[in-house]
Length: 116
Image (tube, rainbow, N blue to C red; front, side):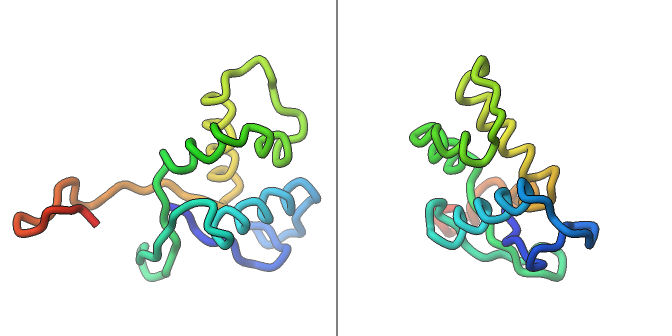
C-alpha cells in the first residue's frame, strides 16, 4: 500500500529533507494526487492510507522510463527497466514514503464475484 506523504519538508526521523528527498516526496505526492496510479483509501492500524497495486506502479514506469531518471539522477542504465522500477519502489519504501502490505483475504466473499 502507499501512504500519502506528510510532514511538510521534514523527514521520517524529524530532520530536514535534502533536495533529493524533496524530489522523492514530490514524486510520491504526484503519483497519488494526480491520479497517475489508481488508488483508494484504506485503514492500516489506526490511520488512513492510500493504497495502490504494485503492478500499476510497474506499468506506469515501464511506459514512462524517463520518469525514473527525473527521480533518480544517477540511475544505472545497465539494469533492465524492471530492475530499475523495483529499485525505485524499494527506495520509496526505504525512505518511508510507501509501505508494503498484503491482502487480508485473498479470495472474495462467497456471495461476491469481485475482490474489492
